[in-house]
Length: 293
Image (cartoon, rainbow, N blue to C red; front, side):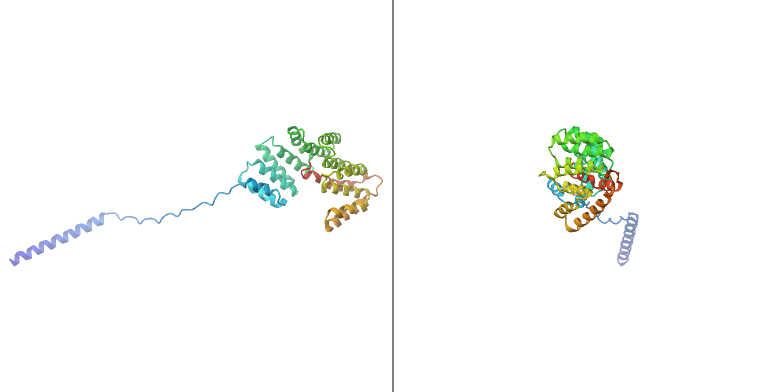
């Protein structure tokens, strides 16, 4: 009996060993699963910038020129097809004296909307600001055709004609402008400064006195009168106007300029003195940089 129990135990042990070996073999044949990858990190894109609201755009027009240019440049970057943003960027750049960049911005607006009045006017103003009136004529004529009862395109067109020595055409469109806006100070000022560049300071003074007498006259018209008075040697009156209109440091600087200008008028004919004419040229067309032309 003992021998039988021994045999049974031996057989059971053999079965257990065989089962363990078989389990090990199965485990060896089963591929080991790769470790699970770490959870992916979700990258949240930055929020898309939004264009300014209508009220923000209105408020932006009250900013200084540099800040205004930055504001409208951002709007153009967000939407290059925004005609209004391109036009207002052109206006801000022009205020900073960046005429080439202003013309480029205005012309981009015209690519999108070829009949946009404001874009046509800004293009003309930019080229006039550069002294390249020839390239202003076509867009400003288009603007005048779009708004036949608006004096501003005609006033600006007269400046462009004057820059290319088409004096009769300039006077004709300025007369048309005055027909639309009687005694308009900006138009009278442009007419006056055209006379000043040709040596007719007395005629320029008469027109500028009419301009500055108007309730809507601006500082620009008064500055142009001051300039012409300096050309004529009427420094006492010019100084009075300067000190009324400008801070002391600017008044002193302009007065020094006028004294130099007046001293150069010793030649018999102002028209034959090249230096004063050049000096007038550099300051003649500032009036077209604003809304007045």
